[in-house]
Amino acid sequence: MVQVDTGFHFTPFSQKQLQVLTWWRHSKTRNLKVIICDGSVRAGKTVIMSLSFVFWSMTLFNGQQFGMAGKTIGSFRRNVFRPLKKMLIGRGYTVVEHRTDNMFEVRKGAVTNYFFYFGGKDEASQDLVQGITLNGFFFDEVALMPQSFVSQATARCSLTGSKLWFNMNPEGPYHWFKLEWIDDLEEKKALRIHFTMPDNPSLTPDILEDYKTRFSGIFYQRYILGLWVLAEGVVYSNWNQQTMTESPTDVHGYEEYYVSCDYGIQNPTVFLMFGRSGDTWHCCKMFYHSGRESEIEHDDAWYADRMDEFMDSIKAQIIIDPSASSFRKTLQNRGYTVRKAANDVLPGIRTTQRAMNNGKIVFADNLKELFAEFGSYIWDAKAAERGEDKVVKQHDHCCDALRYFVYLVIYKGTKAKIVRKPSWLRG
Image 1 (tube, helix red, strand yellow):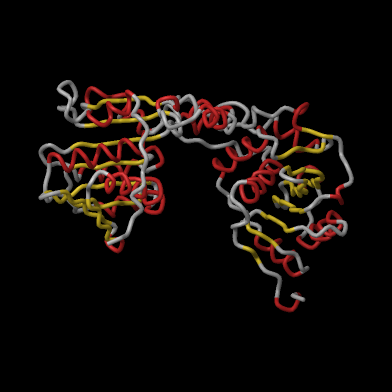
Image 2 (spheres, one colour):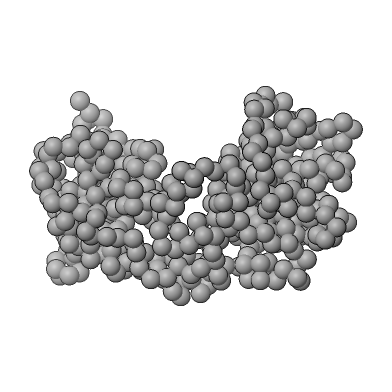
């Protein structure tokens, strides 16, 4: 049995949260089979839905099995199970987790039920739920899960009285879940409750305002306004050259340095240098060479020579495109400490927009190739029509190098795998 801190403090519920908590017993909605809660981030959807799901299970069933899922097991345990068990124990329930079985049981009085949890991260995840019979299923962030997993999991809930619970932040209007479920509420016998951040009474005005500055463009529309809208147009629509740039200065005066690299042979190779002053990072210098544009291709050694010149006696860790294995080894053999970038495109774009908006990063005003890409790096309209968020893989090399740095250093810390210097180069 896992020991748990029971100190979960509730604020008064909003009207929408109360509706989620009681829909399964209200006369107008209790015969529905599905509840869908979608909308902005931090709107209080997950907490109230997971609590209501267990209350429903413990009120109407005994000795039965239920399913719960997040994008991964880790995200489910962190975002759903950890606060849920605090809430339940605070309400007089006993919660016993069996981590090796990915299951927990909930007891109160003579009633005991069993909750199996799953990760729905890819197409293979559907195999995890095959063969099990369940009385209900709760999906956290279902829009991040493949359709095959959700279809297999919902098919496990065929018993009398079973219900399905979905929550998510919006994606594009052609996303499979919106087309299959949200646009077909009557056929699915579903209740939809749309949330925005003011529906979470635990958020103070300062927190609400802070979250509004974290997102721009498409991400603001989805994660703040809670809208199912297309990713279209320029990716960095928040770019403002007047407010986000500064005159170039001596690059040798900063407290800490990184160089972020996107590497190509025919495609452009880009180095961006970042220097920290207090809490602000300055993108202070860049190198740009396109083999295709110059009609001259160079090898790893030539680019490593350019890196030596670019560093100009500055000691900096290098963050590099994870696919550039040969260039990474060349730099490693020259004594550089190299970090593999995390190539998570959408989270990287979101965090880069946030860093730009919050003044965490400013740019020397002579980085012309980077600024040109800010105006030409666009969303893929054809992918959006398929319900996918993708960028067009053109005019993106400077933006990729920028994203590698921001995502790893500013908002994730230096957690990526370090490629160490060879032992013969270590002092």
